[in-house]
Image 1 (cartoon, rainbow, N blue to C red):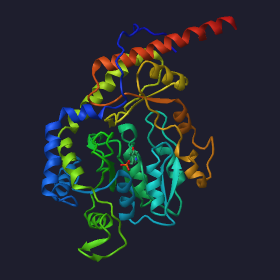
Image 2: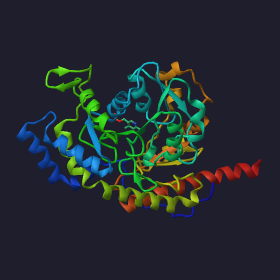
Image 3: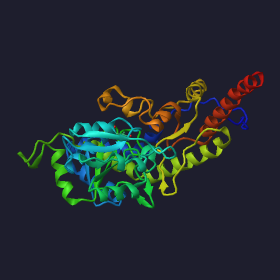
Image 4: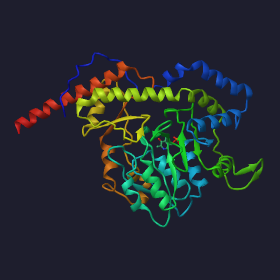
Length: 391
Ligand SMILES: *Cc1c(COP(=O)(O)O)cnc(C)c1O
């Protein structure tokens, strides 16, 4: 690793990993008014705001349809169900994601079939997908991890050749673009999460399915609402997975700020990348086809755990996304994988640490984080050099 060139920081402010209070305070009056409006109208379930939000979010994605549900996990599961995925089927997805990606497949009765990640973008390694296809494969579920789109065109081409459905896990990528197009409209359907810390977050759980297929819309509406086509007339055994009107009202206010927030994330990422250039850490890269929305800013180093502890000592909070890849989770021991099954995902689990990233992050904090990283690299490399000289 290169020695630090950045001077020691004098800043001692705590830097949180995300700051949802700062986001609330920046638009408090509008959020308060939206929430009060729902309380006063008391249209808590499938109220007017839900339909309005569905239209606005679909427009945001340049998509024709959206159906709002109670979480990103539900959005993934119901999207799979709406396209007929069920028991006996296989769905190809990636080993390094949040576990909900695989759980959504399991809930339908289908089996997640994992492939490894591309080491540069951390998204699904498209070159491994075709090998994973069997007679039972029904769908491919790429994940736009960390806000960076998966390489969709070659994936869609494989899907077309094998008549497979493509469901995008866009839970971390609201507003990201692939070759200029918004994610969410590239596959047959896409799932977004509104978990509070996502790029667009509710005040609780929420999610939405975006789709280009009109025929899927009716099915999704029934699936989220007890399988009901008209009140008390149930065509199938659906679920209670509706987005609350309260969440829709809050999301409508926040959606107006999403592009600005994503732009701030991109600027923060650019500054991190400039300041950390000389540290020897592996930094996030944007593929030529991609415009990432930097849900996270993960860096890689073999010294991850000590770097993380050092940053913690400096009052800088970090995260690991994710410490255990899906195939090594106890919950998925039935898939029969072990250490070595997906080396890229496993290396990332051991080596990545996500630095503070949220729109309201200020430049001084980014400099403080970068200084702390550089100092760590300098401090750590000196004894290593001594040890080398002694050897
Ligand atoms: C957050 C997330 C989910 C699940 O969304 P919830 O709203 O928490 O259910 C699924 N996939 C990925 C990649 C996520 O980041």
